[in-house]
Length: 274
Image (cartoon, rainbow, N blue to C red; front, top):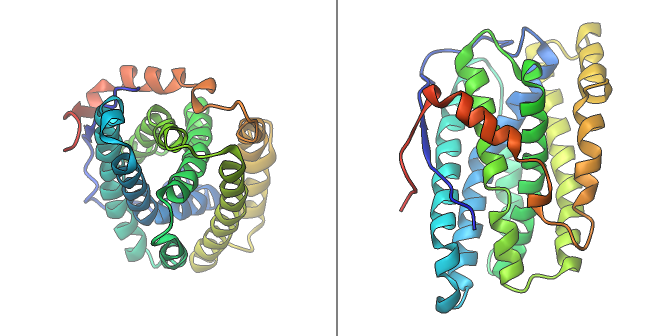
């Protein structure tokens, strides 16, 4: 089991943010804005899935998971709150969050199903966030901003996603979730996640009036497929999830520990949530 510390980030998310806060780059800003728009709904679903999965365990098997589940819930609740504040700034900039509404309706389809389905979906999403987190921590300049609050927000979030990437996966396995359904949910999540990311990013660019600018498309090509491109560098770790012997802890975690150690002045540990 993993000891998960809940941290209070020492940033003021009430102050306004710049329209192109991510290095002045319209595409990068639109992409990260799109991801943030998905977080409040997604993080709440993950919290509920892990809580319900934990409750579904026989009482005698709950103790090894108890502290980790509490830490997971605390970390995700903090992410949800801060990205909710971030998203409020996006609304004031004229952006419209259509992803959240689609996700809310889609997730209702799991109501009443075996809790392993929600855990399988959560584990798949957590793999996406973990490999993207590792990429961000490996390439912090590509997430950089003149506004240190925002660089801190995204890299702190990345570090904690890497920390708790095994929680939903381990609960799924403990409840007897099988490889076939794990991969079924992973394939579905891949298609839905990529589709929603593309739709929301394009809409953000359209509302920003930068969709058809050459600089936008050039940035997109480099950022996604260049030497340090997001898709180029995350494809292999994405594919690793398909292996029957896969476990999230087989993948990089050192960058998370290093960032948290080197930036301890930017947060205060507050312990695990109840």
